[in-house]
Length: 180
Length: 266
Image (spheres, rainbow over the protein chains, first blue to last red):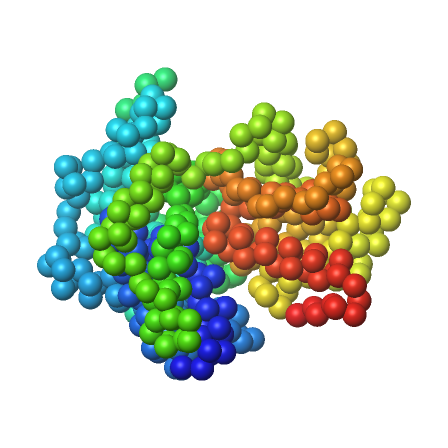
C-alpha cells in the first residue's frame, strides 16, 4: 500500500477511534476484548478501504462505515471465542458494580438510578444495547444506525423504542428505591 | 392508533426522525392525552439520564498506539513497528481499565471552583436559550449578517463561522451575560439538536489552553481558550459529534488567525 493511502486512511478513520472503542466496549462489556476487537476492525477497515466511497459531499464521514466493521468484528470475534457471549444474560458476578467497589468516593455517592441503568443496559440483548449506544452516545441518525446494524429503519425505530422502555422501567425502579 | 404505535412515534419524534406532518399531529395529541404526555416526559428524563450516567468512552493512548502500529505493520510502511505482544497488551489494557475505574465517571475536569461556577452559568444560558423565544436575537445563517450584528452591542467583534457544509448550520446569535460580562452566544444546529457557543475575550496574557469536557444534567460542555478568546460549547448532542464541532471551530479559528499567505480555509 502507498504511504499516502495509509495517511488518507488514518486521516479519515482514526478520528473515530473513540466511537469504535465505545461501541466495542459496550458490546463486549470487557475492556481488553474491546481493544482487541478495535485493533482487528481497523485492520479489516484498511483492507476494505478501497471500497469506501465516503469522505465526500454526502456528509458520510466514515464513522458509520467503520462502526459497521467494528460491530461485525465484535460479533464474529465473540462467536469464535465465546459462543453466544454477546447475548448472554447479565451475570451478577461477572458484571458486578466494579466501579463502586474500587472507588470509595463513588461507592459513597452511589446512586440507585445510575446502578439500575447500567445494570439494565448490560442486561439488554446486544441488538438493543447497540442501538442505544449508537443513538444516545454517538448521536447517529436512524439511517446511519440502519447502515451500521444492517437492518431497515423501521427495525431501528422499534428496537430503540423497546430498549428505551426497558431502561425506563429500570430507571423508575431505581428512583423509587433511592433514599432521600 | 394503539398506544404502542404512539410510543414508537414519540421516540422517533424525540430523535428528530418523525416527518413534520406526523410531528405536528403528535404534538397536538400530547396536549390532549395525559398518559402520552407522561411517557414523553419520562423519555426526556431517560435520555438525559443516559447521557449523564452512561459515558461515551475514550480510547486509551495505548490502544491508539497499538492500532497505528498494527496499521503500519500491515500496510508494510518502511517504518514498520512491532505490535505489542499480547501479554504486554493485556497488562497495559488492565492498567488502562484501572485508570478508568479511578476516574469513576466521565465528569472529569473543571476541578477549580471558579470554572465550576462558570460551567453552571454556561449551562443555565444554554437551557434558558431553549425556552421559547430566547434562542436568538439575530436569526441568520449568514455569518456576514450575524457578525456585524454584534457591533455596538459588545466591546469585541466575535469570529463567526458557518459550518453548514459540515452539517452544523449557523442559526443565529444573541447577547448573553456570563462570568460577570456580556458575551457573544452563537447558535448552531445539528439535526434536531442545538449547540450554543459562548465566547468572550481571553484574559490578558492567555496563551490558550487545551480542551476540557464536562457533563451536567445530560448536557455536554466543552471549553477551551485561544490567545484571543475563551470558548464554551454546550449542547445535548452526543459527545463525539460535539467534539467534531469543537474541532471545526478550532480549525476555522487557527486558519483565520494565520497570516493571509498561509491561509487555507476548507
